[in-house]
Length: 142
Image 1 (cartoon, rainbow, N blue to C red):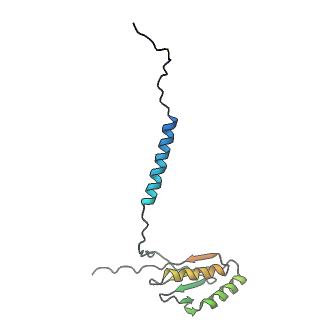
Image 2: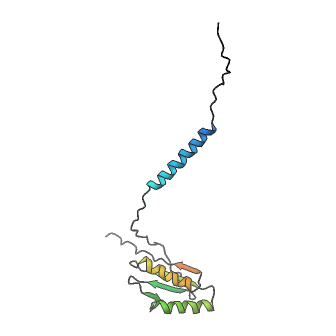
Image 3: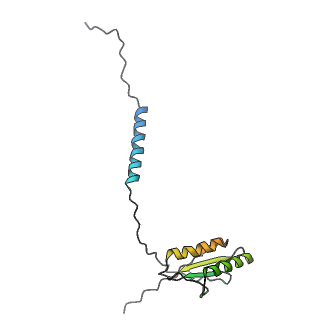
């Protein structure tokens, strides 16, 4: 004969809500650890040149070029930064929709080009384009 206990037995239940909480905690932990394991390294980049670039010079566009020494040229004439700022401010006062094209030599520094871009933005000009030059086509083999 089987004797039963006076204490009522509960059936075992599998609670899923604590399991979901643990899984979210593990997911967040792994994401945080994986983000901290990533090392940030920089590479020297040689940007490609456009192969099919065409000249889009317009008479009302201000064309600026930065050479490898950081000198600024406006339509093949060297111009100082102060003169460039006054030129751009005066031209912008005449035409508020003035487009500016900035290009750099192959060996020009990126910082020099960005400083010219800052001067253009300081003058209030919003229409700015970065011009690219076409790559020299390869010579045919003899």
